[in-house]
Structure formats: structure tokens, C-alpha cells
Length: 220
Image: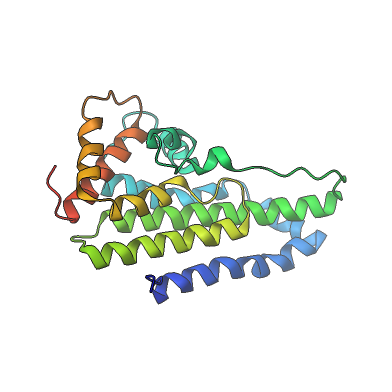
């Protein structure tokens, strides 16, 4: 039998999916939507703290403009191509479907409002999961399988929501790292040693790979 996601992570997924219904009263009423949009400025800041803590837990100090570097990491576009041929470059394969029919302005505003909040919550959840993963002290085989199942479950939840930019590519990559065989992980880490680090994003990935090897008891 396959490893099932743990109950606490399925609760997180259920709450995320329930957000659509929670946002509906605001999105369906023009006046309520107008009031809600007035306080939406800077809502992305809700997601920043978990990512700051993830970067710190990975042992990286951002060298450039912190806000710019965090935004780049959160959005995932800069990190995807560092995965080489691992098949985790999900963002490059996300296709935005175009509707031939012109959308009603009110419906478009409602959709934009819901997607904006779902995007922020999704980023915050992804950042927190990555941060907690970096703080795991030890990870055995069974624990790694459970963690991979949890991460992949959340990825499926984000996929079901259909919000652009989700699931974050690092969730899939982390799920792969925790179950990757020892030789492959060692090779991946060693192959990066000669690479120049053009950005803080790559440094975060390199430190995350090393951290995962350490908690799994793999020498690098």
C-alpha cells in the first residue's frame, strides 16, 4: 500500500480548499468586494515571513535586496531552471487557458479577488512547509516517505485550485530530495560545488540539498 499523507496535512489541505467558499461572500457582492479591495494593498506581505524563516533555516543570508530576493524565491521562476532535468520545472508547463468569450467585468473582478488571496495563502503555506522541513533534526526512511507524501498531497491541493504559479516548484523538488537514493543525492550536491552562485536563490537550493542529506544521515 502507498504511504498516505498524515492527518494534520490533510486538515491543512481541507482548509485551503474551503477558502474558496469563505471568500465567496466577498467576491459575490459588488459592495463587499469594493470594501475588501480597499485593504488588499500589500497583501503579499502576509506570505513573506515564512519565506524569510525558510531562508534562515537553510542557513542563507541574503546578499542582495532582501525584498527583491524573497519575492523572486517566492514566485519560483528563478529557481525552476536550477533543477536541471529533474522534471520539477512545473512553472514552465503551466498553461493558461484562454476563454474565447469575453468575461463579465464583475465576474473578472471576483475571480481576481479570490485568486489573489489564494495565491498569498498558497505562498505562505509553501514557505512554512519548506521552513519546517529544514528544521527536521533527523529523517529515516519511513519518515522521508511520509514527508514526501505530505508534500505531494499539498501539491495536488494547489493543482486542484488552479491558481497560476502553484504549486511552488520547490515543494516537488523537496519531496524528491527526501526520497532520492544516496548516490544520486551525493552526486547532485558534489556537482554543484564547482558552480558559481549567480543568485541567492541557487544558494538556498544548494544549502537545502545539503541539509536534507545531513538529516538523512548521508555524508557529503
